[in-house]
Image (cartoon, rainbow, N blue to C red; front, side, top):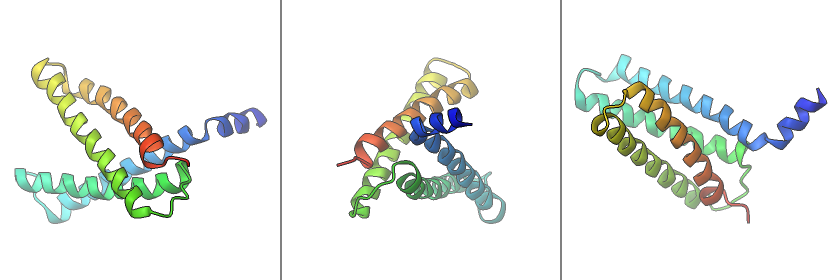
Length: 139
């Protein structure tokens, strides 16, 4: 048991990041499904994208607060500036996600499901690095 506690303490930030990421995924999916089941028509291209954007906003907002408190334990008093940097970093990785998917699937004809898994690992790592070194910097 001590060995598990020691491992957790050593890798606490990364473990908490993965756990928070799992909950963030749940927030994203639940908010998306609520939108398309009760409010928006997923068969309408515009409404589908609106549902996707709403889902992204909810999940990134959840991710900001949970990463701030449980992963990086930020004490930054300027929460507005910190949140702005967090959203900006997530927008940048969203654009990287979209560009990489376009290159892999459209340009190189790689299977979209395999490509999405590859891209998600890239985005996960980039989000962690950006959060650690840009958003939640320790003074």
